[in-house]
Length: 310
Image (cartoon, rainbow, N blue to C red):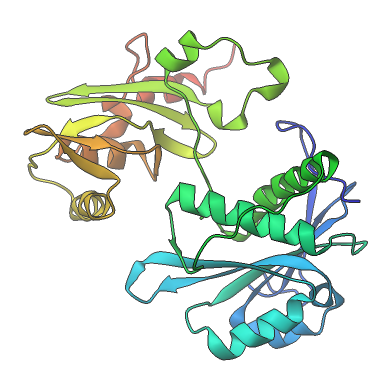
């Protein structure tokens, strides 16, 4: 049976093998001590990927590409098959949108139909919750009934999938779970082994006209927490920030709050502290000086202090 990722937070060595010697080409991903294996490839490389034994096995797969209705967004399809190659052959003929694929199987071919149906359902569930990409699947299948031990194995396998995906630039299942300081302080029942990796990152706060927000600066990026309030009206803004703000409004990530404010409806990873501050305040801001920790130190001051040696 599958040997999975184990407890989060431990150091791990992951191997990415390039059979063709090309970074953008076929990639085989695995980890020492695990039976999981992944194959990532572009649609153009499918004929080469098709010849590998990995695709003859039972597995779960992900198809990705630009959404035909809005190329700023990604479209994703999650599937499973007892022989992955057969299903991908169909998609190669019938599905137009996808430009790349990632396949997950087991080195010892220990996955069965019930396992991959469970994984398919869980990945669709995560993609739906993350709301990062347009989901191409129709009705989401329910997670198939498995025994307690098998569920534990498949959740471990799912952890492995989520560990591998960022290495091939797939973030559409990235559900950002970060608690605010107030919620975290009110709940002290977490056992040490259940502390989530997502909770890492120093808290920062933004306070400006009609704007109040909390964020985390961590490995995932600059995450602004659900419920942040911003200014509805806009001033002079960097065009890229204005476009991002409108995109978030169009997608329902930012919604009206009263007459003068907007509210963030989910934890959202901004590509920089400045984009987060600008989108919320409605004007161009330097996020490194606008976001401050609980002691009033700016992000810029803390970053500068991190270079000091004792």
